[in-house]
Length: 137
Image (tube, rainbow, N blue to C red; front, side, top):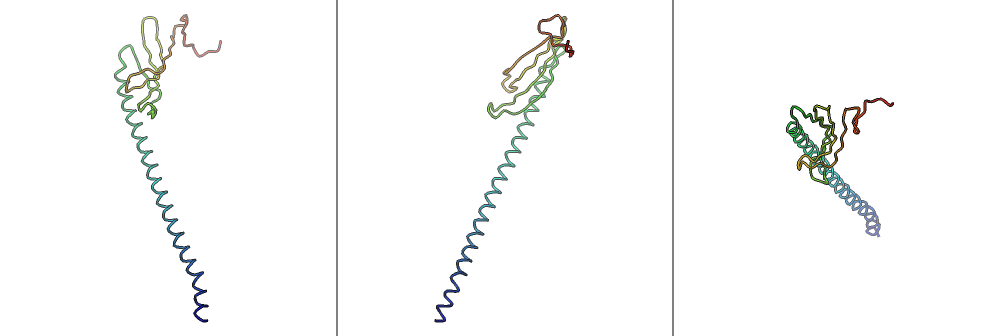
């Protein structure tokens, strides 16, 4: 009889110990999974920063290469495009000539030199593509 009473006491204790071990194991597995995801996230952020930095270098070279005495190129924005796997820049170009300054606004893939968007205007008030003078008249 004494043995049966002792055996009944060990059952809940063993179940509790097994439950604690399983719970600890699951907690450790979740912690490892979270750390792995965190490392991946940090790598993604680091890679994105490096891509943007390289794009900035390419854009600065592009601006120097594309500017001359009559043409000034202004870099408005630069970013890496994962869809194109390339660097995309928004630029303003001012071309000075005898009839005034012609402004063009472009979105360019600076690695392939492909123009994705282009528009322009002129600072001559009589021109049909007049940029405007900032007044609402």
